Image 1: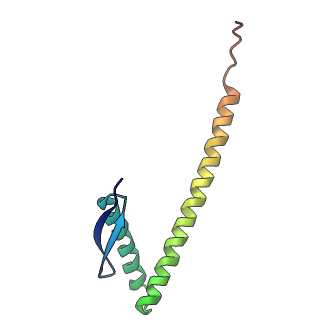
Image 2 (image 1 turned 60 degrees about the vertical axis):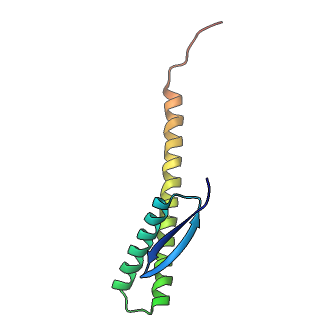
Image 3 (image 1 turned 90 degrees about the vertical axis):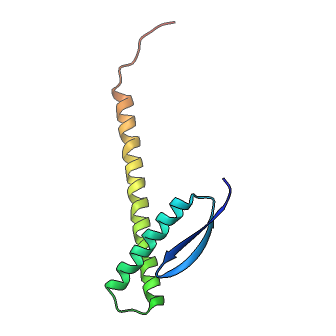
Length: 95
């Protein structure tokens, strides 16, 4: 897919992003980042740069927890698939 420019607003500032992702996706990403930045600013009285760092840490925490959950679910799915395979009746067809 061809790269496209998309202008988004995060923390009251405009940014032009260049990505092969759709403009809709990039706007969704920016809206999420903006919401998280505003949430961090609302619960702290830190300077803007520190709010950005706090937001980055919170987002990294969310990402790592989601990756851990994804890994856990994949392992559980694999375990259940193996269990299902073990309980399937074997065919005794002789060719």
